[in-house]
Image (cartoon, rainbow, N blue to C red; front, top):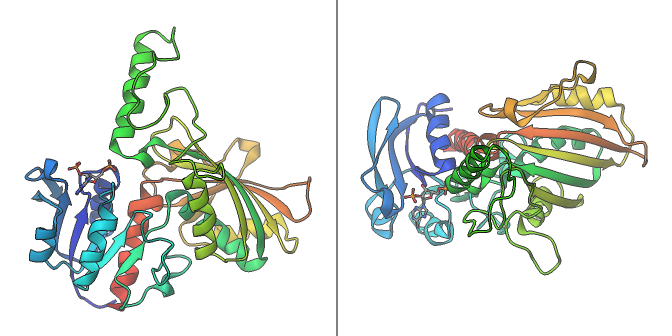
Length: 345
Ligand code: A2P
């Protein structure tokens, strides 16, 4: 890496992912020359800290883009902003690491997990897509296995934290839990009302719906996992998913069943995972040790446990994969992409 320093803009800086992006940029000492924080007009003027400096949030707008030229934009402003603004940055030859699903499946847009496919980055590709949170942690753990024996099929069920749906969703779980606790747990079901972040009560509940339903009965989140896994790992892998929102603040968990082309020893899987960058195996059933969201929260690694053969079908195995959805699932992966990009700029 050169000694070059970069002008960076964090778009969506006041949001659940944006705040983590700022923390990861600080913690990893990304070579920042100048930093800008962008959000909606509602946050303009609000101060956020970067290292010891107080920086005023500016409105992400066409005007801002016309008047400024950062080298790299970390984009997590949500709600249609990626569709609108990322191409404007692209036009000015500014690199955008986009956390939305707007560009992930577009041809020619790299969809990057730095431990897997950093070579899809190139200096002439200005929009870079950060994959879906559930996809990132799954492919991160499956890639070393796929290298030993090709994965034919993946069946996955996710248990996803509310923070994946943003700050509003975090507050909603807090408020609902508080109300139920205040009633001394006499009523677990809150009276019907407009739930703003989710279609149903999330406290003390599980929702088998993340994002909207499609014609085929699957949700958009489930189809993202299918398509993005193929794009990142291998187009020949068959994937089927059920995505569930659970009342956890931080950390997505996944029960993953894989079918391999050839049988491999469990020990070999464990060894390959142990050697993988930023993957940690916690798999000690005797001592009741396995990954859980409360231990993965605020950690950079992807944790894997419950690794076992599936006796019901040849060459099939189970894994339990947990990671912080705001970090490896979003902000950390984006900053890791920025580091890889910095290497080639
Ligand atoms: P703001 O705080 O001003 O609303 P989250 O995912 O936690 O809901 O955060 C979304 C982030 O995206 C926030 O920083 C939010 O800013 C920002 N944002 C939402 N809508 C817009 C918009 N139209 N233009 C720019 N930033 C936006």
